[in-house]
Image (tube, rainbow, N blue to C red; front, side, top):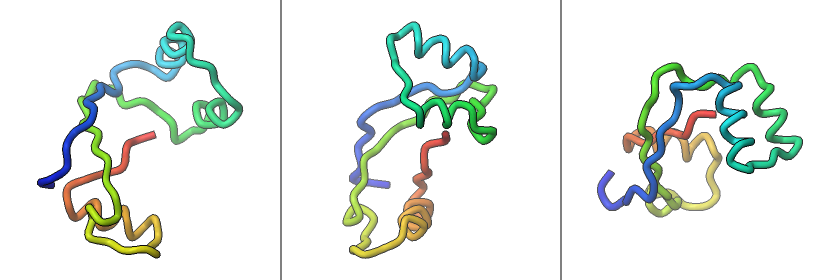
Length: 88
């Protein structure tokens, strides 16, 4: 989508959940109770193959949307513009 700048590019995947948790702990990251719940959830499973992801910040006006709108409407509009939500 033109007009949106990538503010950060990150690499995701390529390691197991246990390896990820170990790396985060070694980096000094502390986990609150919600983070623990997220990491224990069955839907949280890092992808096997490493992938680079470009992160962009968007506003409703960037998506040609107005308030009020539902989160699902935002996702649907973003999808039509080639954007997708970050994976867990």
